[in-house]
Image (cartoon, rainbow, N blue to C red):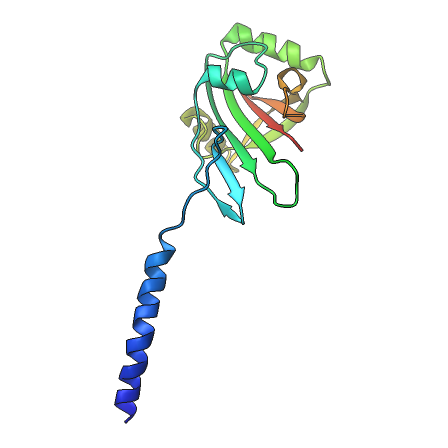
Length: 176
């Protein structure tokens, strides 16, 4: 009788386990019609896909000096308790030597520069990833400036960090 009870239990439990595993792989990804690259909703994170279109970035933020290259992500954090979405934009901008110097002058107008570290993200350009690994601490050393010249609604806060010994700047803006 024990064997048949075990078989009976297996017959009922095995399909439940198999169906549960099959259904768990069908998670739907959230998207935002505004073209955001990541959405945080119900504690689940959607894949982040960096963008590199300078014209599109120019529609999202002010670009006082147009960079040679850009890579950026815009995260939209959906909050059920808030009337509006919280947004965060991180952009890596590379300028020519003369434009990098002009950018330092322009951003230095808003507040004094200070030393800062920036987390090296997996999607950053390979040169910056390699630079972050030189010291072994996975950070990029740089000088931080105010990002007031880049702010445009909905973004209200931010900072701009020039990475030491490069013409790369990391722009971080948020709505909160």
